[in-house]
Amino acid sequence: MGTSSAFGGQNGGTPLIPSWLDNGGAPPAAPNGAPPDGGPPNGPPQDIPAPGTPPTPPARPPIPLVADPSRFSAARNNLSRFAGSGGNDRKSLGRAVSHYVGSSSGGARNAAARMGSARGAGSRLVGFLSDAVARGATEALRALNLGALAGRPIEEIFLGLSNYVCPDGGSIDEGIAREAFIETITELASAGIADLDGLTVDQMQTVFELYATNAIEARLCNDIGMKTITLPADSHDAALVQAQLKDFIRRGVADALTTTRTAAAALTPDRVLQFVGGVYEQAFAILQIMGDDEAEGA
Image 1 (cartoon, rainbow, N blue to C red):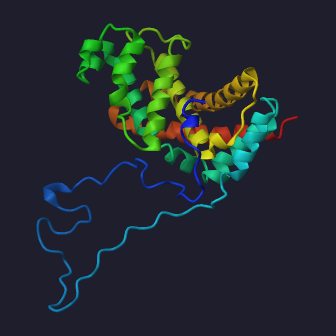
Image 2: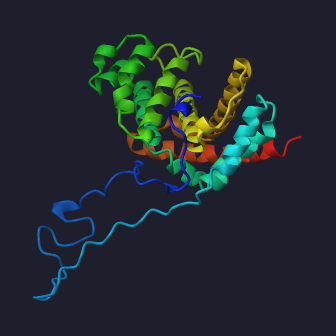
Image 3: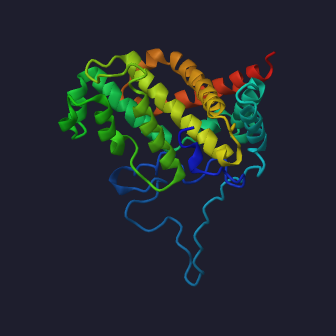
């Protein structure tokens, strides 16, 4: 399951939105060097303590909200039942995904926020692909000082893009983003994406669909803790379980992208991050609905 084996799962005591996730960085500085809070530029603070007054200790940063330690249990138990059935118990698959989005993550918006580095990586990927559609692969690569890759096989080009799309880092979140991108590269040929020159908007969406699917699958599996779930001993059944989970997630991502087709065709650089974040949020909302429907099926 992609990066699912890289981590034993969240312990439940971590915040719903960990502080190490990429949430956009610090606010921009105000003009003329003024601090973001509107205080005087390059001057003393507005409230000066009287002589002899002990200095006020710095305010402690807010403590992230710690979620229910058992919040992954329902999703984990249902995914275990689905895996134990060899992929036959679709109701348990539906419950696992629905619980993950709803009770474990706190809803689609929080689930999308937990994507962290995968949002940034997805934005850089979509930004590059959008540029390639608009100006051609050669110009898009030159803009990143990667012009030497022009004309190379698409897998080689994407490998060369790896450090730009998902810079290597030490956190689990960064590892998920990078491994999802590497897995996407291996799937390009089977998706019919063989040439970056002449890339179409539909092909751009297919590449992002692959990446978002891999990233969501890896995030879900790492959160739930696939090391605690026993896959079937039969390799065929194990592969079927993995394929069904991935297909389930991809259907949700595909549906989310279908509703944003017009926006994808008219992307500008300043709208890419918002577009990608919106796709993740909508995909999680759709996955929760799909999970509920699957759980209630005959």
